Image 1 (cartoon, rainbow, N blue to C red):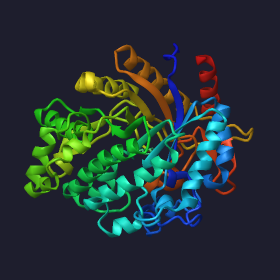
Image 2: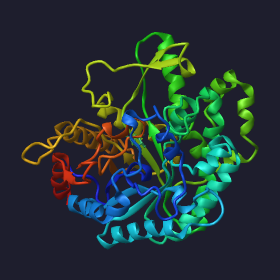
Image 3: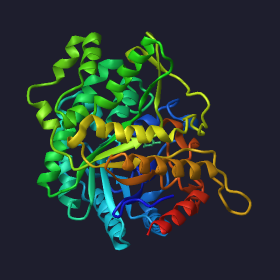
Image 4: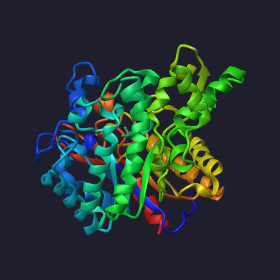
Length: 446
Ligand code: FCB
């Protein structure tokens, strides 16, 4: 494979609740994921993140694995309930100190720390006060962002405010498969708007605290019509508006996409009342980069019974991962070049902040994990990034999801995404074949 531009950032990504464990240590408060995972029937196999990858105790070993792979950067998330156990008021120093130690460990071996402030583990106390449905939370998030920024901005390279606000809105508040498990359908829109408002306020707070490289990690999926009927094309446009534009147009253009506003208005005109004068200019605070999390396209069919009048189908003739997600690398090229085409000169530099696949990985008798699908997946998606760069999309980095097998939300430990296998009973880490492949690939880049 040809070389990437010099200075291209190579990393791996994780998230606090998915790897940290130590949920009762260091004064950490309860998060909505603790509550949700301990509610019977919510998570496959009754799994919880109580121990996860025990990363809080093993972060030095994990940083050594990143270094051994040859990475230059690591994207992790800060658990809000570690820093502010109840989501407001005093800082819990023991919690912040953990991230201090992690950041110092990374810098000690020349890895850039990239920190996400919110990867879905909201303090339960804030959920009890309405969670992202309540406007006050945006101000709580601003306060929390300032605390983290003050403590870490002298050493963190890039900050991301939110991880995938669309998925959090959809699965957490509209459909209920994720914490906090609300099933409000499109009446969940306030959770979308307040995340965006919180983002804008957090950008401001982070800058005040001295951060200089600030972005967000959004989930994108090109919307592909499943047929050539007009209804399917319309359905794909609706999904594109809700999934891709609703969480990006306000950031870059300072306005919501008209089609999304129509859909929301058609559901309940009162929904739009949460957008107050001045909000959009806060939300459109200038960004230094845009994080792109990509897994698969939305394959859309018109269906009056589904959310926004659509249902999502299975793309024919594709390889599928253990999760049942199709492998569609050209969807990543389309996403990256599509962002550039839509926002032109105003498009911030792009970083792929997540891309990866799950497989039913096992350790063979010779100690190897032969995850050929993952190798092919990353190879093809890196080629897709290169194509996008050639076509003029300014892409500056790639973070593989994920460094370690981890707690995959509603799927518990059943979906393995890591470059490193984790035995959750013994916490033994075993680099997979994909780790070795990535290592050789990076060696070849220098
Ligand atoms: C993304 C999430 C990440 C992980 C991957 C598989 O939507 O951001 O935490 O679960 O999917």
